[in-house]
Amino acid sequence: MMLRLSLALAALAASTAIVHAQTSDVTAGAGATQSTMARLLADGYEIKGTAQASSRYIVFMQKEKTAYACQFVTVTTTRCGLITE
Image 1 (cartoon, helix red, strand yellow):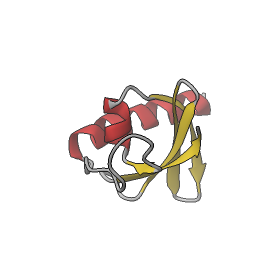
Image 2 (cartoon, one colour):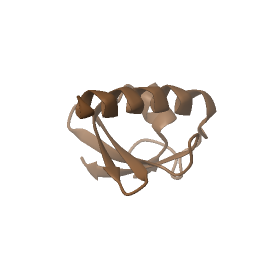
Image 3 (cartoon, one colour):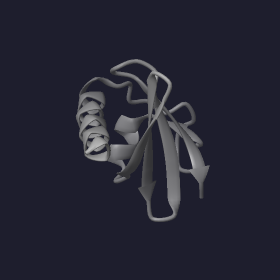
Image 4 (cartoon, rainbow, N blue to C red):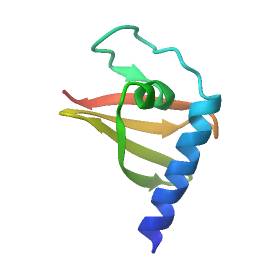
């Protein structure tokens, strides 16, 4: 039940982040090591899991063999870092 709730909250937060999050990458172009959740969702990445770290949520996103971990800095701003290639 808690896993379903976590996934539902992540999906809701992701949809909110898409509307309100910043859309520019820290490093532009292919192979960027940092991005935003809005940019990754627009590029076809899928949410694969979530975790709560203290009062923050971490969302794991994947597309093929590339994965990112995204942290909610605020309710509407995310920061994502490359964890695999």
